[in-house]
Length: 375
Image (cartoon, rainbow, N blue to C red; front, side, top):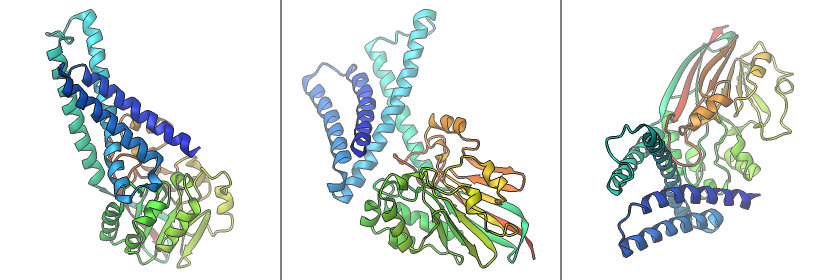
């Protein structure tokens, strides 16, 4: 199964690369050494990516990080180049029937101008996407909970979808930890997909060193997402526990005998408990905060007396046009929602899966101030 998935990734890489390859080759001058260098360039890119996918576990860490960063950006660049050229193709077809263009789009000189213009659009898009990925927004919410608590307010800082691994590496984690600590939270909540897949790159980079710097007087709590389930789940969970994170796997804690933090296993795990089963023995007069990575079946939280549900998973679509897909799949793919007395926030995530790009979405950390009815 793992090798089949890797083969699919390589096929996608080859297909999007091939589109760009043939489009650009058609405008090259008929000079042997130029075409030779061009062909070698594409062959080397495909070969390096294929080797890195199949032999990732055997390559040095720095090589893996380097190849991941550039190859994943390459895929997005080729994908957007394909979109631009398909749009150009549509205009060309329409012009064939309506003759509205003041030039012949099939002339070689015009083709070259179009290719260079498309290249410029793609480069600007990639720069914008990296900017959105790197410049993390602090999303602030102020929510009133209609339940009594010993404290008047609770400041939560939540992060989801860090996807730590070969692409989002230790230096990114340091940035996330510093940013979270700068908000001076009472409690820190990590809402799944902390690891991209396997524990190996996290352990190799000694990311525990950064996790241990997280500072919150009421602790750091986390749940697993679907990506932890694709790898060596228990090894990842054990490592995160050793890094000071209380991992709630269909479990809950009562903080200061005052507020419940409930963590569900990801829905990928078929044996996970139903929410009503998980909450059947708690005192629902106390505030209940639920961490559930994937924002499906939101009504369940409302039906079971949950006051705040935090989810992630969607990335807010991360990259257009997938933003349109997540909007159509989820009741709420990003942002705040309220159903009666239950509040929801679905975060677009702090890191991201695959390329370090946010095109049509924004990386974020969520700062939520809960205000209770004071006892």
